[in-house]
Image 1 (tube, one colour):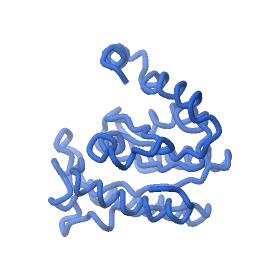
Image 2 (cartoon, one colour):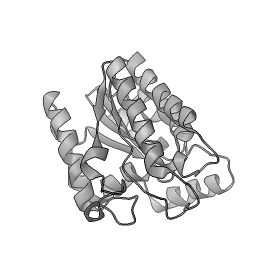
Image 3 (spheres, one colour):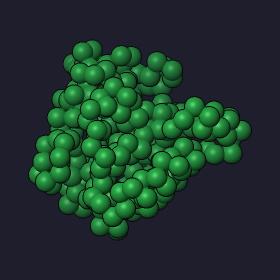
Image 4 (cartoon, helix red, strand yellow):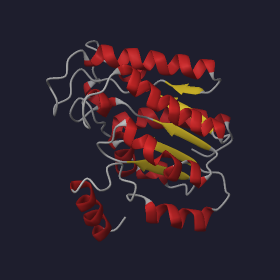
Length: 224
């Protein structure tokens, strides 16, 4: 996405005219449909953790079929609103959904566990209904949010949501990818070697994610 488009999208967000950032990937989606068409694609849907994945581990996304659709700061209602255009309409083979931590932090206002899991479930149900292989991701560990340190019981909330996501995955016979267990510290935050600020990942953290994703993709016969 070029600089002028970034400025344009920032302006729209500031005016609250594009709350879900629907315009963020418009041009990229059009080009993708033109170039890849019906080819198998794997889409990674998420927030800044997903978006930064592409910046810090660009080699992982070298394959043209791996599509990053992360947008920094987003919450689950925003992702749900853009899920049709940024995932379904691209006709992927598979989608990895990683969402929820910004809801807990209150990025777009108050939320609760039911709201968060129901939005994630809705995204999963949409992709399942279109016969897209659906992978739900655990929320990464965090003991607090530096930009919202008034939020209490963050580790406990994350654990509760992750258990709900795991249960949903088992009931619906879809894959659950557990980043949390490999990254959690003794105080239920992110291990220091994996993070820059207790929430976002460094290259070592992304390597853990890459390893887990590659295992799933290998089973599906897709390069990783």
